[in-house]
Length: 118
Image (tube, rainbow, N blue to C red; front, top):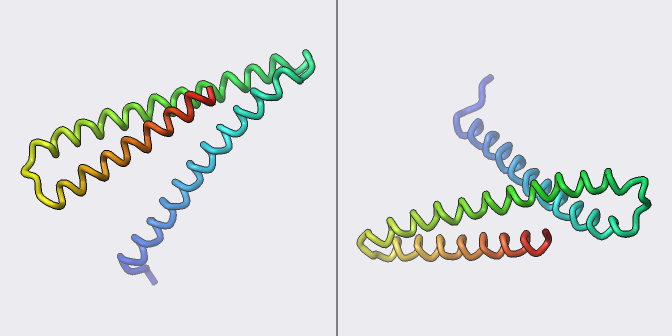
């Protein structure tokens, strides 16, 4: 028996939610690994330094990519914000503007945190 359309959509929503959670967890893990490797580097033996430096470079490249990605998100949100500012201001429009401003602030905080880590 085939699932109804609503059940099918709910299943896909759950898969998407799990996928997004996995991505967020992966990002947290990579940030923690970078911090741990950075702290461990001065303490490790010469034998492992080269490997640790390679891992650090990989994680740093990933973090730099995340910074660029968040900067692009801010640019896109600023374009949307600019568009919303040209529209007639009603209650819903002001609500959207505030949501976008909050998201921009959140992204800027994440960028600052990532730059501090690097």
